Image 1 (cartoon, rainbow, N blue to C red):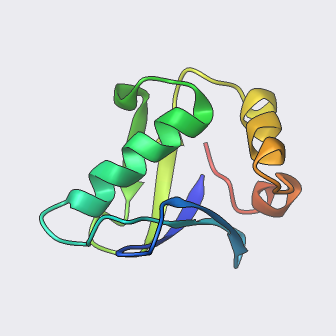
Image 2: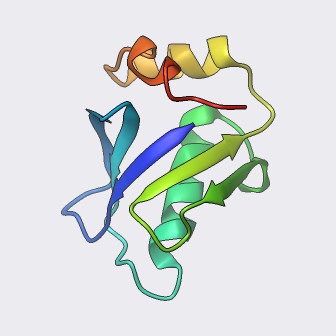
Image 3: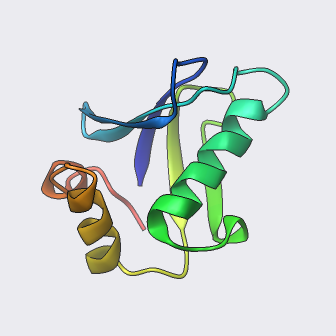
Length: 97
């Protein structure tokens, strides 16, 4: 799933969709992997999976990342995104397995 992060934000949460990627604001700064750790924790909570099921595949040092979430299916994740007020169809075009 494509993700765009905004580190050092006022609060952590889903902001919306930016260029086909899920945009997430993170309170953690982009220093020493803190923002990546916060992202993994937030996405694990959002998807209802353990932190170990979330991996950053690309973009560890970039705001634009590709993330893999294991242990949930697309329909379940889509429902959770809808609960967060987002349209999962906005992400479907760029998502890659």
